[in-house]
Every structure is written in C-alpha cells, then in structure tokens.
Length: 128
Image 1: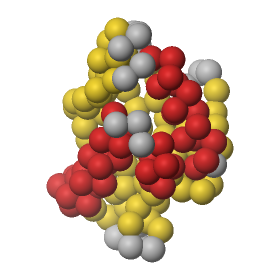
Image 2: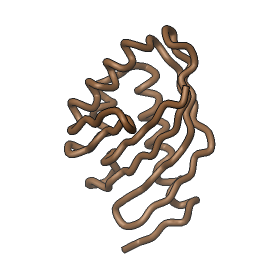
Image 3: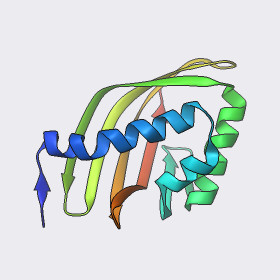
Image 4: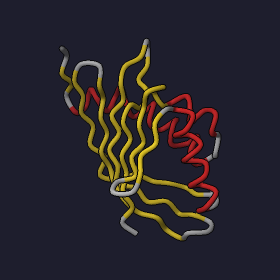
C-alpha cells in the first residue's frame, strides 16, 4: 500500500479539489455530483448526514439556495494520503449573498475510482 508525502498528496488532490470548489461557487450541481462517490457521505457535524452522490449534490444546492451566491476560500489546507485515499483538511470561508460570511472547517477523504479520485467522506462544521 503506497503512502504519500504531503507534497505528493497535494499534487494529486489539489487540482481536483480546485475544480470541484469552482463548480460549487458557480453552482454547477451536475458537475458537483460527479465529484462524489456513489456511496459517499456528507456529514454536517453534530447536525445531519446525507448518503449518495445525488442526494449530496441536492443537499449542497439547497444549502446554497439558503445562503445565495457565494465565493469560497480555503486556508490552512493539509494534504495526506495512503493507498487509494487522499485527504484534505482545511478551514473555509464563504462570502455569501444572504448569510454574510460563513466560516468553518472540513475534512474530505477522496477514494481512487479508475483514473481519478471521488469524495467518499465529506465532513464539515460551521463556526460562524
């Protein structure tokens, strides 16, 4: 089982993550759905969880409806990986139309599927 340095994990995951984040900002939900594993789980820490890529993209779209158009940034990103999994943990801040600034942190575990990785576990919490 291969283990990755932080630099290797970032080189593999960051380009995929950046494309995914742009689709979120641009509200292209069909593309967002394609980044989630069919058996993926989205966890809003201490609140609820959603299972499956279709329900996850619907949940994110509904969340975005409530906050309005947003532009997100990530900071303090740490990348790691082993075997078929790449992981990113980071803080986020989204400037939103209806909810002001929304801040929090997240962890995503991406699982290798074919020639790319898909989000298998996505957990976030909102601090403000």
